[in-house]
Amino acid sequence: MEIKKSDNLGIISSSLCLIHCLATPFIFALQSCAVTCCSLAPPWWRMIDYLFILISFFAVFISSRQTSNHWIKYMLWTCWSVLLFTVAEERLHFGLLPKGSIYVPALGLIFLHWYNIKYCQCNETQCCLQD
Image 1 (spheres, rainbow, N blue to C red):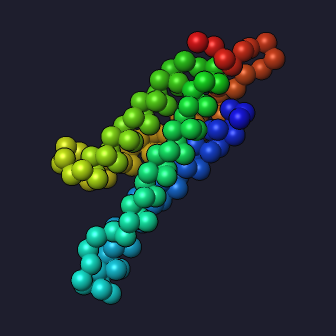
Image 2: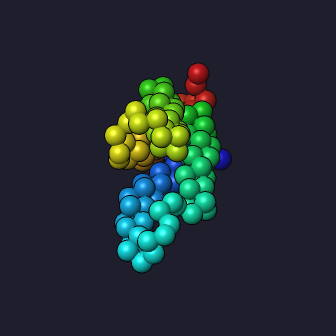
């Protein structure tokens, strides 16, 4: 997969994750007004988080292998790890992070993939597969 494609996938996945996280409180507020017997999210809605984590993993994996900028590689993995931790923390209810913490790594991944597309592309004289 070409670097631009993996970054575009990362931007789309992170953006959809962000929209999913922003929409969740509104959806459940509407649901609680309509039906007062159920306060838990449906299982399919909770599984979307894991789908975004999986898609983001592959986008970060490919982009980090092909970027021409080493600090982008480390920042992509850092943001992805923080995203994974915030999703796990939210599911397991550790109470370590404030509500809304998930927006920071999601926005970070969007920015980093965008930056990688814009400024970290290889040309004919530069090899993208640097270590």
